[in-house]
Length: 404
Image 1 (tube, helix red, strand yellow):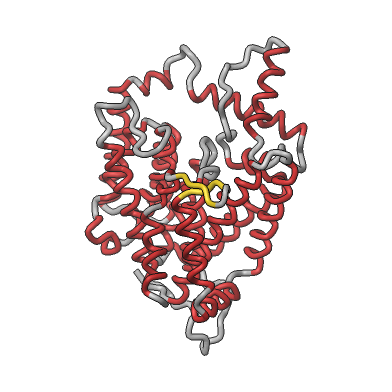
Image 2 (cartoon, helix red, strand yellow):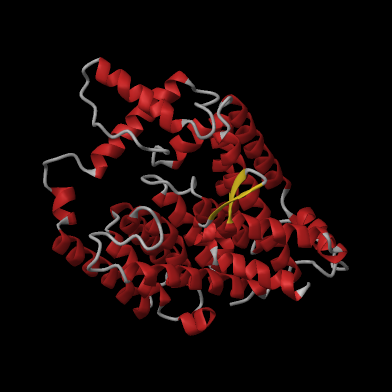
């Protein structure tokens, strides 16, 4: 595999937050990260040996996943057409489906060609998380809730949670010089004061301890540190009182309203949803209707997502898109779960994917460039650990079992 191409993919993983550097190419909106991914695709297509790796990798993917991804893209494309004359849906299609899937497939093909690279990829993800967490921690004392390079604290928490879980449960030697990086990321997550992030992190780590019997002293101390430090910090900042004491509407109240309006929209559009990228105007229209009927809704208008992945995929991609996305996760987790009991890398990836799905019940896990890329990247890493399709031994790119 060409060294430059290999290095470029690793650089892209480290630079996931670089989507914030916006650009325009021939009048089409894009960003620095998408440009890097497109360059990587162009390099791959120009190399016959890489194209051969791609064909081998494609043939190894279970047909159930191929069909499910095809159905998901079809549903997203149909929803983009439904959103016309607005072009936002096609922007969503490009940024949240085509580009992330293109990167994920390249990573999957690279691991199949050279299985040991999964260790470098996990280390690169951890490095990205630690760097973005350190930037966030530098804001302590300046901001009530740290947000690093992102627009809101929740965006930082959403990015860090799956990477933190991955770092926490990966074999110690895999973290190398980044050992302790999970502690840095946890402190940054606590500093965001995101209750959804802390709960999903706690639930996922506890699930790892219970289901995979990882009751080491390290993990016991880790979960005690998480609970105590989070409680103390949230109490100090008043965030704990904000959630527990009745008073002005909280973010929980806002979520209840989002979910209530979303269910109304699903009743109105049960099969096709409201169109890709059209949740915000649809939500605002429903809110105005509630005001007109004197139902006294909360005056919270600016939301691009219902903060729940089942509602979000249903409204954005229709019932077909929701079912396809749900089946993708179910199929992969079912295949990977038995392996996770004996293979620590698989275990870490299973829990990382679970943390995304748990967190996504109360927040936006997908409809941001970095989050969509992160989801499909973890999906590809986990898929590479599950040799579901038998490849003839004569094939030099046949997957090898990756040991811890």
